Image (cartoon, rainbow, N blue to C red; front, top):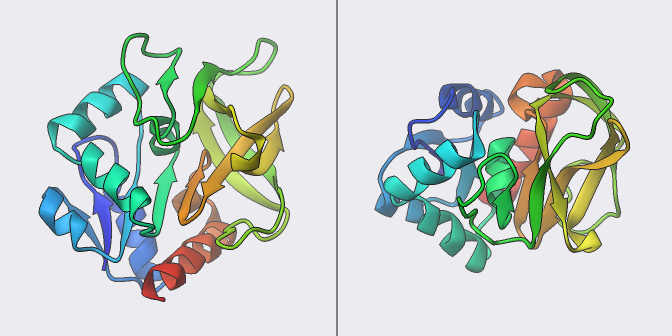
Length: 201
């Protein structure tokens, strides 16, 4: 079972439905203990960093994410969910992220439309086990801020938007995307299917 963490932020059902479409037993989960029993965890996120971080903590699901990553449980974070993995964000000064990956979330650079709301070509970096972006493909983005990891080895894929930016990050069994797989057509569904297979194995 894959737990899609439901902490009252954004359209979580689209992530659940996309995973179910590729054959996964995905369920929206609000209870921390139920989430802990899952074979995989999905951390979605839409909206402001601070609101998402506070809501995640208020539901006690922040600890679920930290525990899942520490235990080596397959974990997928999406959009603001990816940003929450880092220490902090310029969008919400004074609100701490989960601190699972070192780095900070910054506003997209001057000279580009903010937010980025478009398809963009994503290029994988390396071929580590668990790499979910297997080749150059187009994925759909909606965001005004982007994570800047301190460790280059955490970057799993990049795209070009006012310069090279992290489109996906990974470490061990943790994988996260700034783009929305559930809104990215066949490429996104294939990525979710690879994640589901990882959970099943």
